[in-house]
Amino acid sequence: MRKLLIGVVLAAALAGAAYLYLKKENGAPDYRTAKVERGDIVDTITATGNINAVTTVSVGSQVSGTIRELFVDYNSRVRKGEVIAQIDPRLLEASVTQAQGNFDNAKASLEKAKVAVADTERTYRRNLELLHDGFVAQSDVDAAQTAYDQAVAGQKSAEAVVTQAKGALEVVQTNLAYATIRSPVDGIVISRNVDVGQTVAASFQTPTLFSIAQDLTKMQIDTNVDESDIGRAAKGQAVVFTVDAWPGKTFTGVVSQVRNAPIITQNVVTYDVVILVDNRELLLKPGMTANVTIQVKKFENVLKIPNAALRYHPPEKSKEAGVGMQGMKKELPGQRVYVVGKDGKLQAVSVKTGVYDGSYTELTEGNLKEGDPVITGEAPKGASNSGGSPPGMGFGKFR
Figure 1 (cartoon, helix red, strand yellow):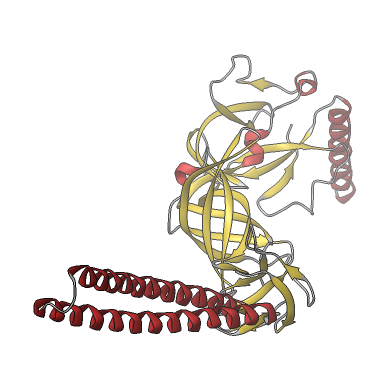
Figure 2 (cartoon, one colour; figure 1 turned 180 degrees about the vertical axis):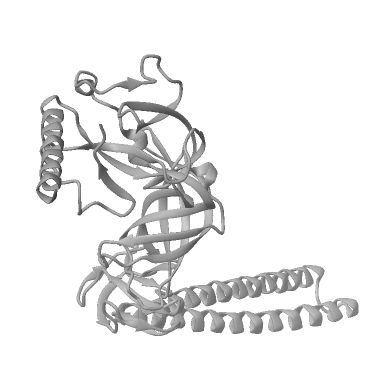
């Protein structure tokens, strides 16, 4: 009896092996499958952008001259008002001395004009009194009055010259102060564009000497979001992103602004979505490229299918391999996925989908339920059906 049982088992195994061999020879493929699952899907927008400091100040020079000293370098921390560079002030100091001399001369001229006014006024009043007594002629009185009026005008002119000289002095004093370059903000020097001995010319355009990032613990990402996605972006949305400098590490942020100005590059329209990032660890540096995922909305506990199932289409050779194609004689409208029926034949299932992410798509309508296997691809001939498949995925061999 035992020998008979062993013989039956061996016969069944040989028959199964023969069946599988003949099936492969006839071209029947092996299918990769994945189950319909229930879980969460996050509607997202993907984009790329560059990390920048929230506030970057370009420090320039108001005056021309030769750089005599530099007090900071790259990555130097500076405080507002701190001296960071010095332009050779000798020419400016000479200009101040000259302007001060002109100002003093103008004041002396004003004093002289005041004396002339006082003298001509006394002469005019004396002649006016003598005219009533008949001691001077009217012409003498008129001449004295003219001299007085001229002296008053001369005093006003001298006062105007003093004002001009004072203004010129203030200009050169201000220029001398500008020779000492100070930091306008607290921050870190991220760029230095001059060296000691270099001449800067501020005649036509203010040269940039330093770039200072005000606070590197708070950064922002300027992302280019495609016009087809910009309608879903809004202030306050959560963001996750990665940078090449820290592979495997995910950073977070929040959308702070959706700008309306279009960015047109080779007829491609994008919009700048500004994302605020906490950089207290100082891992992120200005200029880094960020791969951004904006989380628009989270859909919880929905029925979902792998995106690969929606992309799969049976090749023509499957139709010629003796595998039935039920539901394929008449073209189904819209999207479809494929399953293997109980009779071992492919069946096309029409579905309607909702939101999707990088791996799954929401199933809103369709004759599928949780746990049903759907075809995501065909396994290469001779591939093993066990092990090495990702979670939720598997190789299923159907008749």
